[in-house]
Image (cartoon, rainbow, N blue to C red):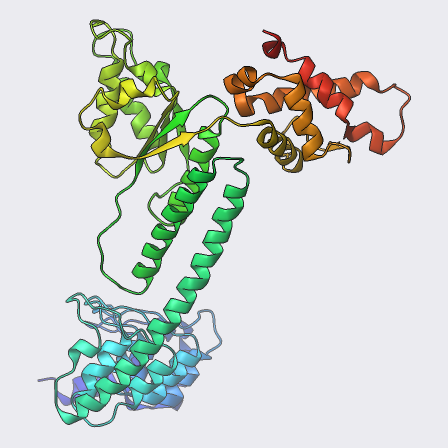
Length: 479
């Protein structure tokens, strides 16, 4: 037991004055040494604010919170148990102190070392008496009734079944239901915003109507999962989806992969939206023992995002007897990582040759659960891409600052493409036709204009004549 002299010594400290409610002595102590404002006491490591709040010495709490000096009071300071001053007020039923602390911005969801929030401690205190006014104060500041401590206990779980607890239980459960409703509203708002963002990205994909429908279904499911998590519901975790994109060049496979990267990152399935594009040469080595490490490096680079394996059928030799080809080793290396959840893999390539990949490994169809067919683009869809490209040029783009003449309507461009190309030519390059066509059209504009041209509009306007010349100058279309 401490002697009288020890008690007198303790009472003359700033913590002693905070406990005793001796405001004049505490003020004098701080005037003599302003650095005592956040002084920690022995053993408990509590600041004067902890002590004043725990003893409901409201005038001292107010003074400390508004104290002017070289330091500001540490509102979220933690004692040896990880408790803030608000925890101290809550666990001792000090409602007045709790109100002042909350008014000054104290964090109502702060967690002590045992995971308890101030609401947990206020409920624990209420079990020893009839009053639970501090609980009502914390609830007024929207203290989370579903917060769990380190033992997975919510504030409601701490209650027993006596009459007093029943009243408190009704109060807490009422607030819990209101908070769930509010989270539902917020989750709905966030989900709608993300769906709008996704719709904007999808609107830049031309054609592929069945694919876009699947993307919307898929995205909606993942966003609903996000809402379920926000509401604290427990459900099976959706596994990262591995895919195969089947179609000719220029049908939008890489663009869709980038949209998917944004989508999967947006809903929290992937930590990044990066898409790492690889081909056979990035994965396959020339000698025994080279392919495995080379492939693993690329997988490591893609972790957290999407590994997009373009022309994936090139990993499988045309002849089964070709034992010097290491493509199959690269494929098997990728397959071994697909169950890790660290990367989403998309295999892309021509429809028919991709069957070699699909049937080369018995685990392929078990891991690759989404197969998307990218149909060839018709003239109308190619015309839409022309408009989209011209309306969404980055500063680094070759057509930035240029525009189409009003005569360059979707119908006019579609008819031009239909007349200047064959179906076979379009099938071979699809959307790959658009960029060189526009670059060539700009060059034709430059050729057409005289150096004395001063009309600003004419200098930046691409006409149907330019687009026609752009198509005609594509050497690949004449072959």
